[in-house]
Amino acid sequence: MDPIPVAIVVGSLVALIAMRLTRIGKRPPSLPPGPPTTPVLGNLLMFPRENAYLKFTQWAREYGGIFSLMMFDNPFIVISDPRYVKELIERKGGSVADRPASHLIDTVTEGKYLTFARYSNDWRTARTMLQKALSKEAVIQYVPIMQAEATQLLYNMMTKPENFFADTTRFGYSVSSTVLTGTRAPSSESPISKKFFHMIEEWSGLLEPGSQPPIDLIPILKYIPARWAKWKGLCADIRRQQCELYNGFVTMCEHRIANNLRNGSLLEGIIADQKLGNDKILIRGTIGAFLEGGTDTTSLFLKSLILMLTSSPEAQAKAHKEIDDVIGSDRLPVLEDFANLPYCQAIMKEVLRIRPMVPIGVPHNATKEEVIDGYVIPVGATVFMNQFGILHDPESYDDPDLFIPDRFLKSEYGTKPGVNTDVRGNEYHFGAGRRVCVGMHLANNAMRQNTMNFLWAFNFKAPTDPATGKPLPVDINNYSEGIATSPRPFKNIIEPRSPVHAALIRKELIAARPIFERYEHELSPEEAKYAASLGI
Image (cartoon, rainbow, N blue to C red; front, side, top):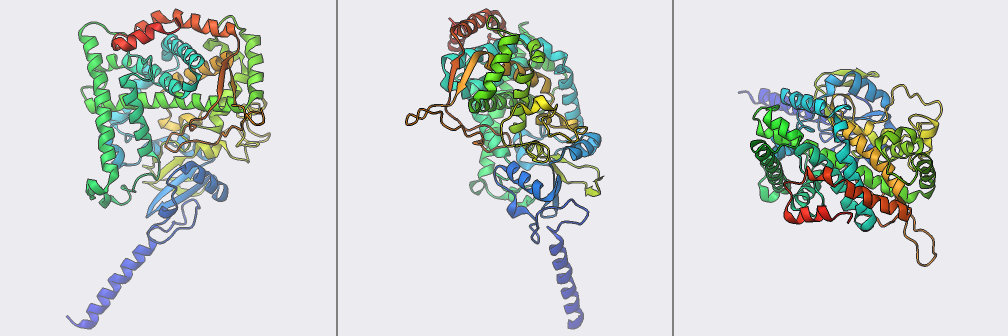
């Protein structure tokens, strides 16, 4: 071949490749604006490795309520404005009901973990089943066990206040486990409880955006040997733990069914009626989503509630007066009281506003192109709903980083006068659209009951500085990393409001024994002995 044409061909190919490479990572003009990109990588190097919600919120203030990031040539869309939540995730929810592909998650769950599963027939079958079982009307049947568990939580916090972190987690897990598997957890030190809590801590860390290599963006990373890829060992370990735990619950319920010892758990019905067929992986994924989501949602809220109350004696004083006027000290609160306690409602709403449990939610995947406010949301885009950014917008909230329950007495959504509330919701912490949390009604009942209980029963105080005699400052921003965030352990003082309150807690816990006993048949002898001794 003539050397001149060869040179032309080679040069042309090099030019084409160079042009293609310069386009990779570049933001198309049709996308929402965002931070400057670099060739090929886009915004990859600036993607936060921890606390992504804080960086997303900072970028939202700079680039607007909808902005984009480029991960190579993969667009990430971040929504921090309720207008866009309403328009894209709710009104056009079918276009973003999918989840992004995740090699890490699929390695652990085989693709059938309900929270992260793709928008498929399996997902629709499992979700429809849970929607019926956990509807607002259906969860009324679980109120007695939830209230009994909430009473034990009061007792635990009264007798060992220094253990409130473990005890709030135990509450969330025990309610979820009782409803799903028919077995409660009277102690956070039981073998199954400890295994579950250890697993969920590792799982949450694995899921933190930016915490692991971008395997889905650079697929060749899948083939790195395990000795150089820490994530492979972590995935294998989490999968082993989940299989052991969740298969154990299935075996336990199968034994009850075979021996006519059913106690009405959801899992018994799933197995006996073959609501998910014989798909053991889907059953295991449904168990995991229910238990992990239920435990996290409630326990993280309770920890934040205690932190915020400890920081605000003024809010406690107002709530104590309201509760004393409406309920008094001769009985514990019941769910029906919540409608008559507007300040307690305001406290709960403000805790959920200032610290949503999953600050950027679980990402969505666009399966159909949409145009929002002139911006194109292309097929394959990963869409984040930045709950933290929405709920900390200074254009919508006065002093958004401060704990001010009174804002919810002035307006339904706690917003400034004049803010358009037609597109807002009070439950962004549960997500939105077709992926909204299926257990939200059960979680709401638990959060309402415990908010009333804590304010009825206790004074929460900051420790005193021995040098000055004044309360030490409380850091309400000291939160852990993870897809779900929690206050880091903090010191406080938890005291019963009076001997009358303390005596009634003991009395009500003893009275709850018949409710507990129905769900204690699989306890070890040590656990059963401990459960029977509570309150005595």
